[in-house]
Each structure stands twice: as structure tokens, then as C-alpha cells.
Image 1 (cartoon, rainbow, N blue to C red):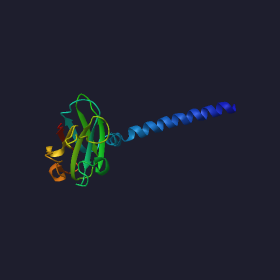
Image 2 (spheres, one colour):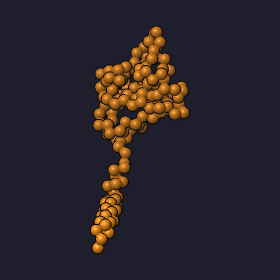
Image 3 (cartoon, one colour):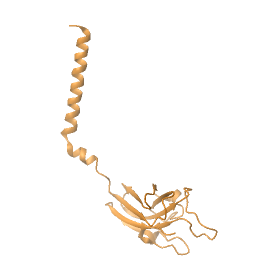
Image 4 (tube, rainbow, N blue to C red):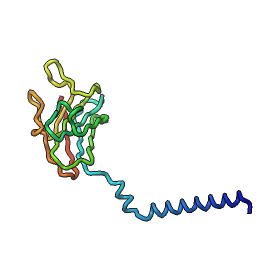
Length: 162
């Protein structure tokens, strides 16, 4: 036999074996494949009452009072910047361990990474907190905004204040 024919036959045989092996691996354990595509439980936050679609929404998840809520860029456990669509946004924090948390949400219209205020310190951009904690002359405490998370899915809604 010609050497080039033997090589082509060996390559073709190896290719067929690889395809067959891949098919066996894919169909051998469909439950494991389905499991790997499942999403992690988490804290799912729908943000409402956004006055426009300019900028982005910053969702900051805190696990302690340290820096809550003003120092979200430095103190938050998790931070998520989300584009606004049709004056709504959604933040999904997944794979979060059980514990006590508080959320602060800011509509960062000019994308400068902070909640802008006027000369008197009154916010000029939208803000909101978990538990619908209210700001009166100052931001609410971590305790007022805190909630217990047991590791299972939690859905919440936060409406922004302007």
C-alpha cells in the first residue's frame, strides 16, 4: 500500500473515533449537563420609578454597616452597574452566602460613580434602599435597610426617590 493512503486512512479512523467518543460523552449523562446549566439562587432586585433611561443604576449589596450606604464603591460586598431599559432595571446577585444584608440603589445619571447632591446635600439623583427604608435628613441605617437571606431565591422591588 502507498504510505500516503495509510496515513489518510489512520487520520480518518482517528477522526471517526473522536466524533464517536464525543457523542458518547455528551449523551452518556444528560442529567449532569442539565444541572450544569441551572442558575444559582440569589437576591433578585427589580428597580422601579426610574425617571429616565440616562446613565446606569448602581446596586450595592452590603453585609455590614461599614460604609453603608454612602461609600458603596469602597465598602459594598457586591456592586453591579446595570443599564436602564424603558425606565426599569434589574440586579441579580447570585451565589451569595446566607447572612444579613442591606441594599442601596443609585441612579447614576451622569456615570460619575456617586450619588450627586445639591449645595444643601440633598440628592439630585435617584436612590432607594431595601426594606423601603426611608432617608430623612440623612441616609437610613444599615439596620433599617437590612434583611435576612437564607441562601434561597429572594425577589424584591425597590422604588427610587428623587
